[in-house]
Image 1 (cartoon, one colour):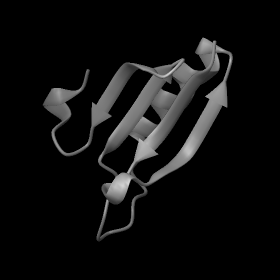
Image 2 (tube, one colour):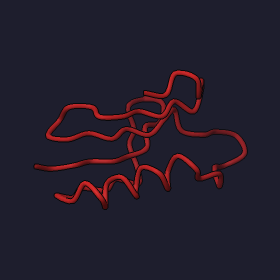
Image 3 (cartoon, one colour):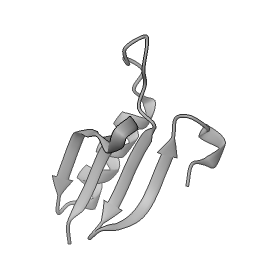
Image 4 (cartoon, one colour):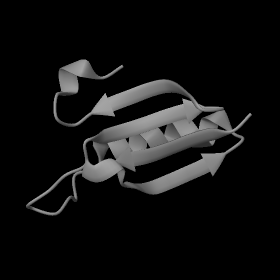
Length: 69
């Protein structure tokens, strides 16, 4: 099993990627990115993705936090 957590930016760019076999580590990385607020003034990421073996487990949408899954 491989968990991936990363920030999604416009133009399909991703950063702050965590790749691990530990769900606990992945969950911590996801929570840390969701609460992060130190974005540049002119742009912020679209969201945070949390996947397991290529399948999305959770997604936090910064553009519309009500659509977080």
